[in-house]
Image (cartoon, rainbow, N blue to C red):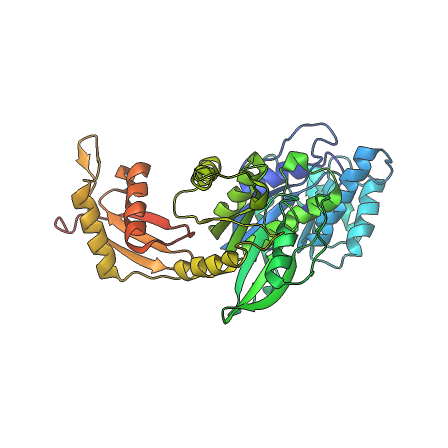
Length: 440
């Protein structure tokens, strides 16, 4: 499970600029105006071989009582509560303020690893001024310039050094299945139907489930952990702090899962929010089963199932390898297919193809459809191997990887799936250049 690092501080100290610097992309809006960042942003960063999730927060203002300021403060406090490491930013150009002192008092009580950053330390004078931060009693301050990147490497070193070994996921024989989706699609109802008892509150009010809840059970002789999550909403649609907290828990649930059961509302159909959730799953390279709930409310004819399946695949841009189930958690119809399919998908995720068979697939594929030529240079394949499972990963050795067009890579993936299926499981295809062995 990826550690979570929250960047906190009062408005306009440069939190979003540091966020963009750490994750390597301009994801946060950066303006020289206090209060620009009102919602938290999430993105992954990597440093010294460790991947972690960085959370950008709105500014902490303790002397403001407006509705927006209060909500921003609540969301920042929620990020602090969920974070594994906290980066506290102050402004070396302005010195300490009352808000800095109040934030320091709040952070000190968390007893979590804390990294103190003095931003805007662009000159020798400001770097000297950064020493004032020692008065907060939070340890050594790191003088940085987020906008220029100076000093951020030291901050990243300190972040990674602060990670606890306990953050890694415990080894278990149980298959972890996360039930995810936007609010009010019936995730808790599905969990209750699978368990045959009321283990979570079921309500028609969106956002009732606020934490990720783990439930251990056995299915067909296989130990299973069901992770019920709060609904995930698009960032711009999440207003209340408790719902933002739920998003963070849901993202962690997806990271921890072997298989994600993505629940859709049959009445609403696939929405942009559903695609947003699917994007999180695919970014984490998790296996997935699409579960269309409330199927009992749909008027049907002989074509409904096929038409709806095509609609889902088109809207979510899923290929044919992802199973789509149609259930009713309320009536219990076909609910048992969810875990049966999820366990089958998990098995597919662990399949390893012998190298000899992989190269046979490659020979047949290239004979059936010749590799492309670019600027007179033909793409040549030498051999292929599968070095890893979970997810299945294939490495193709070619004369020049720049000659591999994405359409041909998709063709090769389809050829592998034609032979082995890999139902519901993403495949990773890597291409490596090497010299022609005949010329060596």
